[in-house]
Amino acid sequence: MQHLFIQLDDLSDEILIHILKKLYNVEVLYSLMGVNQRLNRIVHDTIFTRDLCLLECLPDNKTSSPLSDPILDRFCSKILPEIGHRIKTLYLERTSMERILSATNYPNLNNLSLCHIDSEVAMSLFDENKMIYFEHIINRIGYS
Image 1: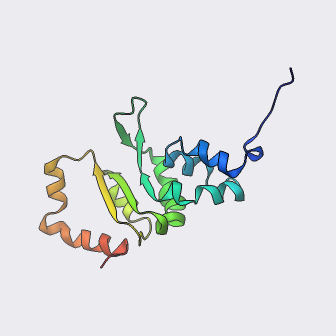
Image 2 (image 1 turned 30 degrees about the horizontal axis):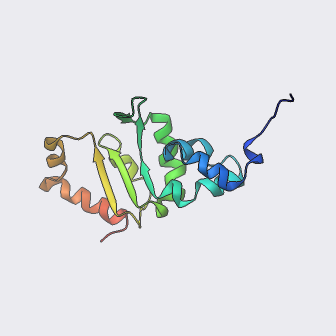
């Protein structure tokens, strides 16, 4: 029997999208954005950019941790500025929240979820002294 050698370029867009949907959007964007024009067009689809969980999901699928600094650096400097206008939902954790929200404008952001944050920290984020900061962030992401 002959060995079959199939590359990503041999697959149709529909099959490739079906396969990529099985992965986390963060992995797809980080790994494939900027590789070539075809993959760039595919990963810019709203399937991968509409809802973005900027956390690293651990193998047990029950817990997550912050993204590593190199991954977060690339997201904030390259990926988010390209797709910020497409994002409708962001899932963030408190240690990278400010950096991610300041990376670009998010004019279509409707939902912001903060993960791994206890009630005391959440309340401190919204105290009177920090409301000016959050008003700035809210204006930056496209709301007034």
